[in-house]
Length: 158
View 1 (cartoon, helix red, strand yellow):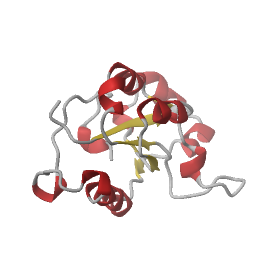
View 2 (tube, helix red, strand yellow):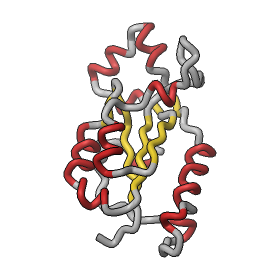
View 3 (cartoon, rainbow, N blue to C red):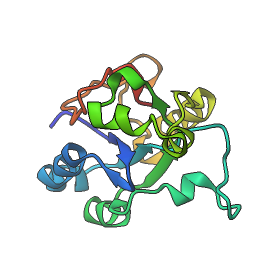
View 4 (cartoon, rainbow, N blue to C red):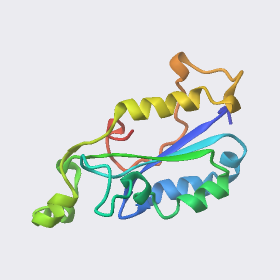
């Protein structure tokens, strides 16, 4: 392929990457292992950065399959970013669940992404020594080859 590096990300639900994203990594395992790869997950919601035990939510929210995926493709890094919840994009069952007060507290509506953090991570990738001398587009932009997608607007993911 014509790509020097790859960034693969997925929303994380109930401790797992979306099935389509997991399948994408498995299907392209050999191609991904042959170049620098970074992974990210979009998951935790809300403004609190720690859970009830004081643990960093980004660490607690790491999807269960990430260690296996990182090993399979020798990914350079995985980062968890806070996500966004737009109720109009939820299934009927998910909307019904959010009517329960406890579920609404666990699944707050809103956009909790930290764009400064996301941009700093992306800039770190763009300036990674593994990519030195590699051609990039304006501001290090690259083109997406295939997006596993989850049927959501691409602007809804980091």
